[in-house]
Length: 431
Image (cartoon, rainbow, N blue to C red; front, side, top):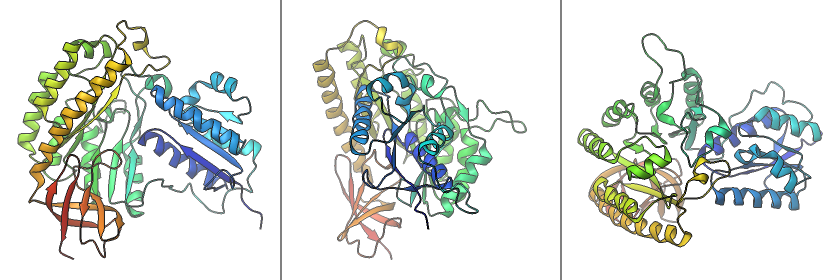
């Protein structure tokens, strides 16, 4: 029997890019290709790149160089693929270069240089997972209608393009049937979901309606990348009712009005604080995560101080922070007032030191309480898992002692015994 050609995949970037990699692998398998675990056993390598910030671009270029050196047959796709001329100039031997989510183009390029025996008999496009079996990322839309000056996502991925709700629900049901106990809902702008779709009956199929439908599947539903739109007012009641996880990932980027204007961001810190107070009154167990950029062009010490003051007042549970990095094609590159790198790093350190204390304080509220924990891994007699407040890969975890008999994917009730800067520790209850 003829061996099927093997494709290696290097997947870089965010969870949204990971979903693209899963879909691409599904297409390749349906076309008759197998996957390879390393360069040596691969007949061709696909590198799904990220070009969101300078460091991500550098990582992608290094990955392409390594794939060319170790294998030689390389297709580049993803966000960095939008700069095809630059890539071909640097790597003239590339098989093909495509933009993000260009699944048909990638399969066509692979087929052209590496013909497959043909599709597997009677096989539909399979669901491929690059995450553990017990959770899955569910991408509900592509693109973005915002024009933030530090970002080129609309240039790379186009305007908002929401998936029809029936398609999203069908995929969600398939993921649950395959063993997923948590669905992590993602998009470039999740809260805008459905704005570009035609109305259904008397209403548009917005994010609240979709979240409510996903909540009927009997698994955890966690929402990421929610701009502070009014739609959030309809999501928090669903969290309070236990229909979706009480977890709100709301990237705010800054708190200084002057910086937000230069970023072309929509939020005002006073409004956000008022809404946080209202949401926490409605849903006391709400966990709020956000991300921020320090060192944006023109950011003064007063601007940065406003950001620190906001963090003190907001008491966010989880925070990620990045120093500003110029991205080719971003409007912010032309703004005056570049912040020296050493100042960026100093501000980053100050912010994270402050936030560490806030996170430690916020985590103490769980001590003595019982929470559900989804087990991710078991190491000896200790299980590592996540509670409702912990998103995979970006947040802390729960360390569960006396974990003999637990397996990844188990959902167990845990009594929290102590807390730290980012993590919780506890013991399992019941069988």
